[in-house]
Image 1: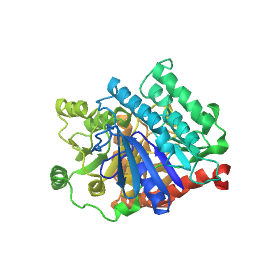
Image 2 (image 1 turned 120 degrees about the horizontal axis):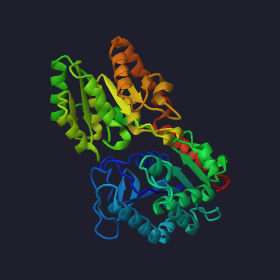
Image 3 (image 1 turned 180 degrees about the horizontal axis):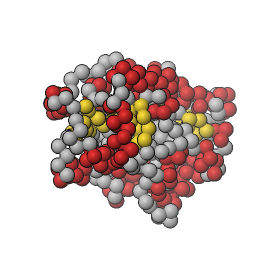
Amino acid sequence: MNILVLNHYAGSPRHGMEYRPYYLAREWVRAGHRVTIVAASFSHVRREQPAVRGVSADESIDGITYRWLRTPRYVGNGVGRARNLAAFLWRAWREAPRLAALRPDVVIASSTYPMDIWVARRIARLSPGSHPDGPGARLVHEVHDLWPLSPIELGGMSRLHPFILICAAAEKAACRDADVVVSMLPCVHAHLSAMGLDLGKLHVVPNGVAPEEWEILDPHLEATVQRVVAASRAAGHRIVGYAGSHGLPNALDTLLDAAVLLRNAGVEFVLVGDGQEKARLQRRVTDEDLSHVKLLDPIPKAQIPAFLAAVDIAYIGWQRVPIYRFGVAPNKLMDYMMAARPVLHAIEAGNDPVAEAGCGMTVEPGNPAAVVAGLRHLLALDPGRLREMGLRGRDYVLAHHTYPVLARRFLDAIASDVGLRRA
C-alpha cells in the first residue's frame, strides 16, 4: 500500500519525539509499503528541528519520506502554539492536491488534536489511490488523546471556548467520516459511540517499543547522571528514578511531596528530562532543601535503558482527573517495563498495565503518603522478588507492545475496511 500519515508533531530518532509515527512507518516500509509522513517544521517536543528553507522540504529517513511544512516557533501553550497549529493545518490544506498526487491508498489523521481530520479527508477525497480500479484513499483517524475532553479536564478550559468548540466539531467529523478509527486508549468505546462512531470501525492499538533498540544500547550515561548515581550508591542509598517530561500531567509535585516525607530515609530521587514545570520544580527542590532529589538534564534516548538499569524503582504518576477513565498508553511506562524495572504507578484509570503485567505496585494518585507507602513496600522486598517483577513487565511488553506487533495490528485494522480489502 501507499500510506500517508498526517502528524503535526512526528519526529524520528534524530529529531526526538514524537516517535510512534516513525516506528509504525518503519515497520510498514520493512513490510514493503510506501510511507509519507507530513509534519510541522517546529514542535516543542523535538530535540532537533528539521531544516526547512522554503514552505516545505522533503527528507528520507530509513526509507520513510518526511514532508516538513514550515511553521513558526513558539514557547509554551499560548498564542504562539495556536499560531503554529493553525499554520500547519493551513499549509497542509494548501498542500493537499500535491499530497493527493502521491496516490495514497490510505490517509491517516494522526495528530494529537483532531482538526487534522479535515485536511486528511480533503487529501483522501482528492486521491485516486494507487490502484487504478480501486476505491481511492481510505480515511483513518488515530486517537492519541481525547480532544476536546483533554484540554477541558486537564487544562480547565471552558466547554464554550472557541478552540474547544472547534475540537468538538472535528471529533464528530472524524467519528462520522473516517473509514477506520484506531485508538491508543483502550476504554474509549462509549465516548466515541456517543460522538457518532460506528464501533465496528474502532480498533485499539496501544503504544510500544522497538525491541531491536534494546539490543544495541549506549552503556555510558551522561557524566552528570553517572556522578549522581555513583555518589548515591557510594552512600548506600536506594534510587527511585523518573525519565520523561516534567509537565503538570506527570504529577511530579506528588513525588516531591513524597520525597519530603522520605528525607534522611536513605532514598535518592533522580529525575531526568525537561518540560514546562522543570524550573518551578527545581525551585521547590532548592527552597525546601531537598538535597536527596536531583533534577537532571534530558539524556539521549539510547541512554534511557542504562539509566533505568541504575535505579531500584521506576516511578510514574498521574493527576487524579476523570479523563483517565478512558485509559492510558504512556511511552515511558513501556520503557520502564522493557528495562525490567519494578514500577511504582500512581494512577486511577480505566486500565493499568502495571497491574496487568504484575510488574510493580499501583497506588492512589495525588497522595504523597500512598507513594511513600508504595516505595517502602517495594524497597523492602527481597531483590529476587524485585527482579521477578521487572522481568514480568519485560515479558508483557514483548508479548503485547512491540512495534512489529503493533504495526501489523494497525494494518489489520485498516484492512478491516471492506473497500480497502477489495482493492
